[in-house]
Image 1 (spheres, protein in one colour):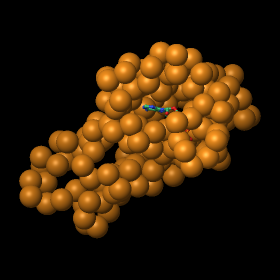
Image 2: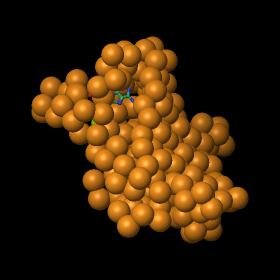
Image 3: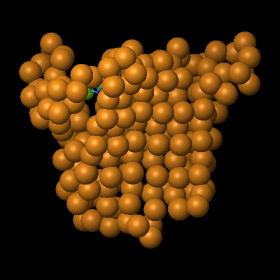
Image 4: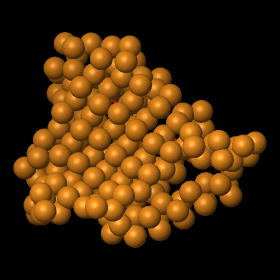
Length: 180
Ligand SMILES: Nc1ncnc2c1ncn2[C@@H]1O[C@H](COP(=O)(O)OP(=O)(O)O)[C@@H](O)[C@H]1O
Ligand SMILES: [Mg+2]
């Protein structure tokens, strides 16, 4: 995986596949601590404890289309390449939390990629799912909550061109403002 935004998209796809109706994505960078933490939490089916133990193994998958399940193991690899690590916590019937810690000063740190595009892709393809997206750098933060947005939009569907393009511009501006 070339960048952080593609990892986020891939991990959120797992949440969607598990039937989640709420996905919380957070990206938080702290310069002083040299930390860049990506977390994706969902309220999907979760995984049994024994399964979670092996889930970072590239051959651990429930998909039937191919033998390898690479998403989590690739994220683990990207985080570990910077001296960081990944944790996966899951409760059957409750949901899953994937948290990856990166050390951004490391030469092998992946670039952020196109984070607004990832968020827009997720919202566009899954208008029935709620997303809370938070990003922060040091003391600046931005949050997008599609549930609140939907309430504000009243009868206008969230996945219309106009709304999506407004969300995208807002995201781009916000990431620029917090220089993430
Ligand atoms: N958020 C999640 N909720 C429930 N199960 C998950 C979640 N994330 C991963 N899994 C399980 O772990 C397996 C491995 O995930 P992953 O490494 O992304 O590979 P793949 O998606 O290609 O199978 C998935 O097939 C799925 O069974
Ligand atoms: Mg996957």
